[in-house]
Amino acid sequence: MKKNLSWIAVFLIAYVLQTSFLNLFSFKNVNVDLILLLTVSYALTHGYRLGTFAGFCGGLLQDIASGTFLGFNTLSKMIIGFGFGLMIGRVYEGKILLPLVSSVVATAANYVILIIVVLLLGYRINLIQSLYNLLLIPLIYNLVFSYFVHKVVCWLKNKSFDS
Image 1 (cartoon, rainbow, N blue to C red):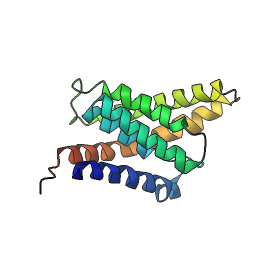
Image 2 (cartoon, helix red, strand yellow):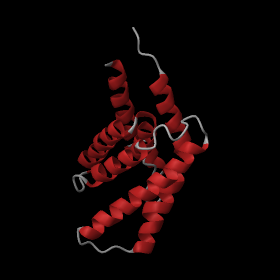
Image 3 (cartoon, rainbow, N blue to C red):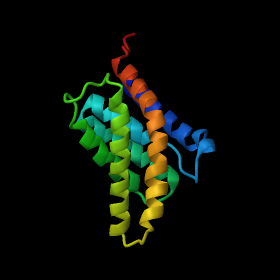
Image 4 (cartoon, rainbow, N blue to C red):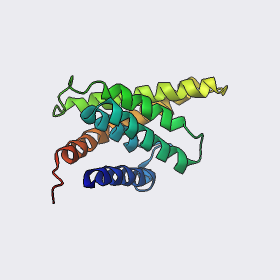
């Protein structure tokens, strides 16, 4: 029970940090996606079922709080949580390159999923500008924070909550 409450607190703290403090360091109104990084690391360390659930909860939190299309972030984070959760047992969670590579792949996958959804909804987008604003800038931010987020996830996974 304490471990579940700790995970909920981590996701809430990450969201608050992402939308308040880290927003001060945004570039062109784009900043790090801590929920995406948490979902990826959580899925890599806990499997596809819990990774999908974490993606659902984190994406839903983003959707509800942002006021945009409901389900937009939920769908992308769920798919990413499922995909990275399938890799449990195939990767060693202690490797330093794992969070870096996974953040690049997850950011690109998130971009592709969101662009497909926007196009399916019938919206027109400038692909070059969206590549810069929705892929390149978040990719750089996510690379910077990915290692630290992964370390927090690994620490919390291995922490004992016996009382």
